[in-house]
Amino acid sequence: MEQIKNQWTFKNDNEYYTPEYFVRPLIKHIKKRFEGKKDIIIWCPFDTKDSAYVKVLSAAGFIVKATHIDTGQDFYTYDPDFNFDIIVSNPPFSGKRKTLERVNSYNKPFMLVFGIQYANSGGFVEEMSRCKNLQMIMFKRRVFYMSYANYQILIETGKIQKPTFHSWYICNDVLLKDIFYEDLEEDKKEKIIEEFKYLNGNK
Image (cartoon, rainbow, N blue to C red; front, side, top):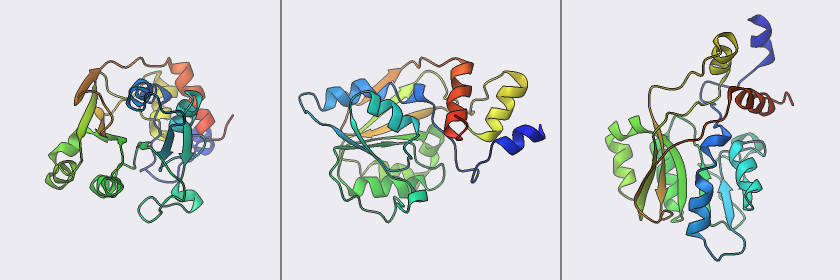
């Protein structure tokens, strides 16, 4: 156990990594939304170059601009010096209303991950109502977010520990209809472990 604890380090409990299989469903929707556009520029404002969003969306042929607070680009104070067509990411678990408020200020299409429990917050729902064209992608399965604690459970028990809540993508002016309900094609455990190691610099 101590060996695992020394090998995997995280900055804080607010850092959970999105698996690649939760990014792949977005590709078809983005391509359809910008059909006919040659260069689609995606801003991932909570991501490093190693994030699943950057890797998967770049591989799909999009131009991806990644910014992160660790490189001095705090989403809540930073204004990008580049043009972009859409914002796509999984924001930190805390400060969701603040995130949505900031995203709305750009008046651009976006696709952001939120846990369904945030619908219990009046302030968050109020901010949702300010979206130009509010849309959602809901999923039949819960998502396995990668964290040190979840990795421990996976290694020790072989079980994938998922959160008790479902996650959805809240979108603005992206989808062809307001609500999509989709299944998720999950990766195998070995792929998840490999991805986790990569994110932690153990390539």
